[in-house]
Image (tube, rainbow, N blue to C red):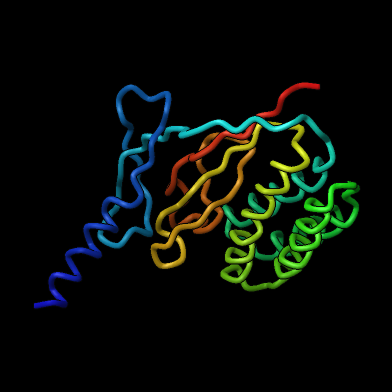
Length: 196
């Protein structure tokens, strides 16, 4: 009996966990995609939850460019391209120049994690990419950014514990699952910059 109840709880979570929230959609659109156990479509209704403003800075420009190349490769299920972009990210992070001690430590941690993106195993790449994101957000908050960045979240990642990534566009393209659940998730925060 406990297994039956647990199965229903897991099924209920699976069916509700990936409801996208689209801010500018008055009438929810329905999207179809595979990958949800017993759940082939859900409502796309994405909403930005909060806005964070940081200083304007181009310190991370090339690192963010490389990060978004890794994201694109992962959302397209391309492990080889993610590995190549990961190498570029490591190189660009090594070139970051900052006097801030916190930022220096974050860059060091990011380089260590980004090195693991060179793996040819896309599952490992996705796990490391998700790990990388938390420190990258901290670094952006410390040194600033040259562009608007969206923090996005998928509640299904890592057996339901969830996972975050950054995007340079608000439209959802989930790199943590790629084509199997490309539109799963929601935008949680918009990081903007205050012009100099």
